Image (cartoon, rainbow, N blue to C red; front, top):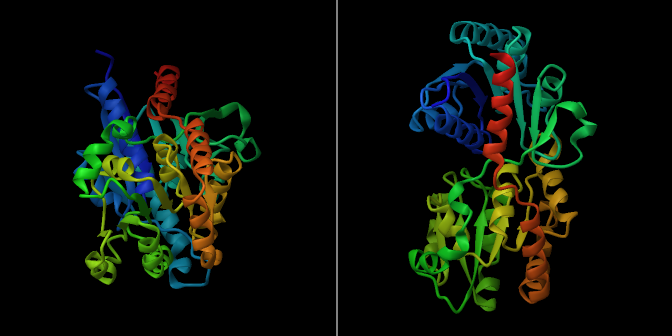
Length: 366
């Protein structure tokens, strides 16, 4: 059995930051049975609820992001930042970690900044093809950055970058064998094509509005629908469950079966979703959210489209959906090309590779 380790992981705000953080923690626990792992998140954000459910302790910082318009929250930001840095200092000082890891989100900035200034090894896991301001700033003081895309040398020092990919659910690695089980689980017609619509755990308002206008088109084309509308929108769209060939879900708990059942996927372009879709290898139409920092979802999607591995439909051009999706539906050669090319981008061993880098830091630091 390997020596025990003490590690702080900071990340959250969205599932895209929380899942990689928990995945890294689980891999560390596999390698170090007596590992002591502490999470640091932002008070009031979903990690404060999700992380304890995964069996890990978490402490919260009073921190939020900066909004694009003048608000009271922005006026409070300097005070929140000072408070968070001070709290993070005491958390790090008392816990005495060997390494501090940041997976993105509001809390990771103060936590990694404090750790680096205290001489503790730090690692940043950058999920996007275009990094946010926090990780750009942290790159000047961190020891290692694990990335999922090529070309990030323009943002980060080349000598600390390691391309590992983003952690993905391990049950997605062999979905082809689950096709029959998936069709039965969702009670689908095996003679029809199935489209899976994903807008994230909370949902995507504009994607939902678009899909609602296309139900007649799907029926005409003989396409059945697994539609994750999100927890914020289930009351509004649940009525469409009455439609033949339409299944509306607030959240999909069996993602492996959801992907296995799908012939086509419509999705937002968060970094975690893209990493999963590369593993899954189905034809994908990305409709990126334009309402995220640095418009990083569009940049993520374009990085995949550049390899002729997916289609991209900007939200402002959603009136072209029938033309774009209809063209994909009628072109089996394009379907095959997209599937083959997106599989080439998959990095299924990301979690293990990231923990390998953490172990190198522990070795240097011990």
